[in-house]
Amino acid sequence: MLLISKTTPAPIATASLYCRDGSSREGPSNKEYHAAIEPRGDAFIVTFAYGRTDSILTTGTKTPAPVSMEDATKVFDKLVAAKLAKGYHEGYPGRPYRPSPCPVHGPASGIRCQLPNPVDVSEVSRLLTGTSHCLQEKHDGYRLLVRKRGDEITGINRRGFIVAVPEPIRKAVAQIGFDVLLDGVAVGETLHAFDLLEVKGHDLRPRRYLDRHAGLLMAIPPSLPALRWVSTAVDPNDKIEIFEEYRQIGCKGVVFKDVNAPFSPDRPASGGPQLTYGFVVSASFVAADQNAKRCVRLGLYDEETLVPVGNVTIPAGHPIPRMGEVVEVRYRHAVRESGEIHQPVYVGKRPDMPAGECGTHQLKYKSTGGEDA
Image 1: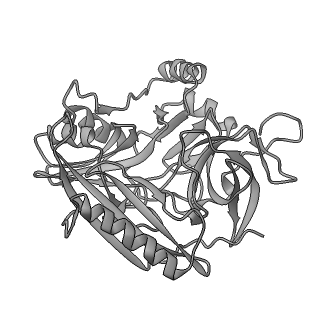
Image 2: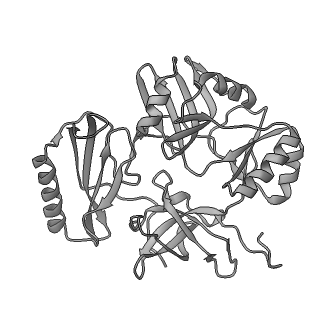
Image 3: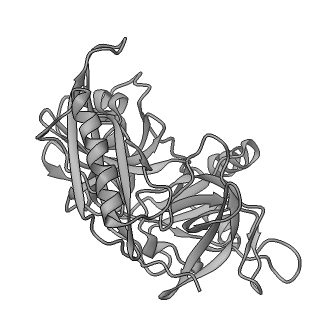
């Protein structure tokens, strides 16, 4: 049995450092460095995160294997001293650093996402030919809401925590001349916005989706590479044509949205106003252990038990995930008898996804008839 808790213990010690870097060709920039001693079973590890302020931080560990508290403290103190010698200093009043379970999030925002439920292939024809739902591309990125209040721009992840906003996206949202709350998917340094929840202090959540989307089109200034609205098809003929186009070019999938539905946070037990259908099967897994070379064992929760579901090879250029971290993996199908996934392909880490949500319910199984179910 794999023994990984759904919740990660709090760090023993943390340090948040800051400096002003004037060596960049793009001009001076704010940089930050964070370090922490975190418990791992009966031992400890030293983790770090660094990068430009208002960007996604690079994370890693200084202790490849857990060590004693005495050794971890030595590594931690040496690391902090080295950064202080390079010009970093303490006391930066920026976003707080929370190394566990998501190394890039801050406090809770009080805002909750609306999450879609997967739909079976048998329902796709009805959704394409009917007029109750519009169709959008399912972008292959991470969920990001961006709130603008005056000159303050804040990012919010799918779990409702405050996170950094990539600088190109921040600059693009700053060009909107009034307060807004955008909902979308960040792909690299571009936000693909699909909903407008607040504008000029007014809450748009009770309005139907098509009205909110129309407001989004008017709110986003044209010709901003880092901020784009998501194309939406309503007419059945357009939906069928675009659906086939997305399938042919290898998009991740599509999202069907009830055009008359208000915004409702969280994910219903089944169905709901937003439904997703994937052309490519993917799921979020818990990294359970590292096997030979760059191979990582994967696990999913079946109620309270983390069960093994196979292995995935981490490609060169990707850091090997630590035990307990959440990763995104594409695969062909899962076998119901063994519970293992076939032909897994590693996509990357999912720091915005809590381990407790990585359940076996995500799996797409191979049918007994030999075709993918």
